[in-house]
Length: 242
Image (cartoon, rainbow, N blue to C red; front, side):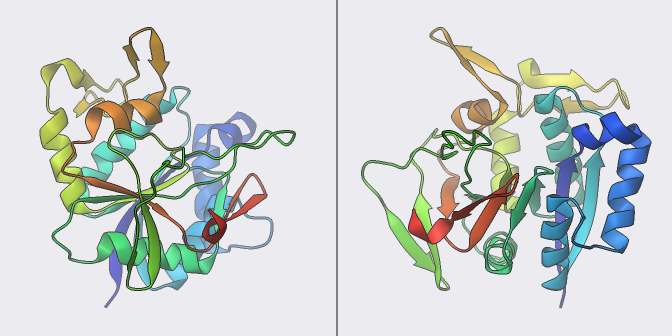
């Protein structure tokens, strides 16, 4: 039986070359005929599909504000009733990482769970990890997959993040506040600004940090995947070494 999952990505850079609709059409073309010149995200999506996943794909071709794009994607994912995998266009992962992600978010388990995939930043001179490893590590294995529990409120880069339905439902309930409601100018639909950026004690939290710090309730487990290899803009990271 195929596992159904909602996947989203934003192709802002490609839209600069081809225009918004052109970029979306190009992603669809690559998905139909993936190859060595395909975008990293297309290679990742192809691996998910080759693992017998039925993918409902959402491609944002023109968002200049990443927090708005991610909030739109969450909204569309939530409407489908499916678990969600958010992917940046320059993220690629190996088959074992893709398989672990699918198993972890599609398994009918009574645990609200977000899975983050660590990766290295683009800085070739000093690449940095997109999670802060906790001083006291709490690791566990689930079906052979090694996971690292992240402290409550700890942020992570949103290059590859998956969440199951229970997590999404608890986030919506926790964040359902009129102050977070916005009307999307693209379709005039009322949505939650799940990735709205926040200021706290003089610190500016980006969209990913704001999400984990202010929108994810403590009832939702956030775990880092320590299986496989992930590449960010071609820079590899062996997750098992973390």
